[in-house]
Image 1 (cartoon, one colour):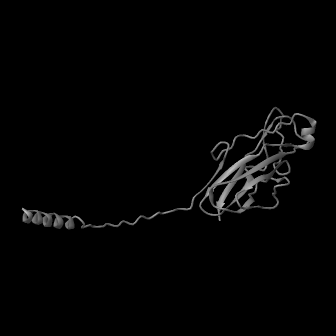
Image 2 (tube, one colour; image 1 turned 60 degrees about the vertical axis):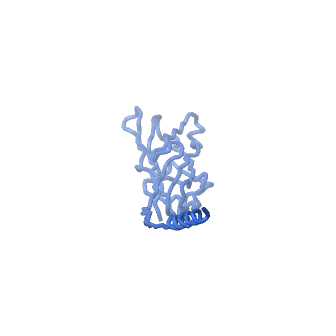
Image 3 (cartoon, one colour; image 1 turned 180 degrees about the horizontal axis):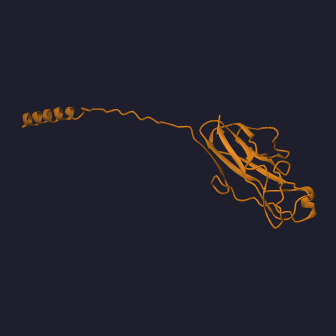
Amino acid sequence: MKKVIAIAALAISGFAANAQVSSTATQTVNLNLSNAIELTFTGSGTATGAAVNLAFNTVNDYANGVSSAAQELKVRSNKKFGVAVKSNAANFTYTGTTTPAPVMPVQGTLDLKVSANATGGTVVSPFSTTAFSDITSSSQNLLTNCNNGGAQTFSVIYNAAPGFAYPAGTYTVDVVYTATQL
């Protein structure tokens, strides 16, 4: 009886050695990255911000100008970037009852300052974090050498000071921001 058990143990032992055989396979995975950049307003989550309404209700508003609340924008970029700003026209578009329509220039009327900058970049002169500077219909650098990342934010405040030369009505212009990878 002892001989039969020994032969069975040898047979099981040989079977276990065959179970350790293995094989491998290899596959290469390539990440094909493209340069990507996106600029959005945090309030809307889109490239179109909510309308900024600056109401001139008193003579002091006309004399001193009216400022907006801070408008925050967010850039997502896989490379360093810069941001430029301009108006989409040299003059405001007028809606009202005065004929002929008054012509109000953007430059000298609508200003901007950077109120917060969490991009790691530099605010470019003539713009600053302490004083307002003219917005023009020509593209001007606002920020430069900003860090890449998924949530690089900055905020701007507008100030309008049209003076007393223009009649009542609504004066409209689009301010265009452009983020460009460096």
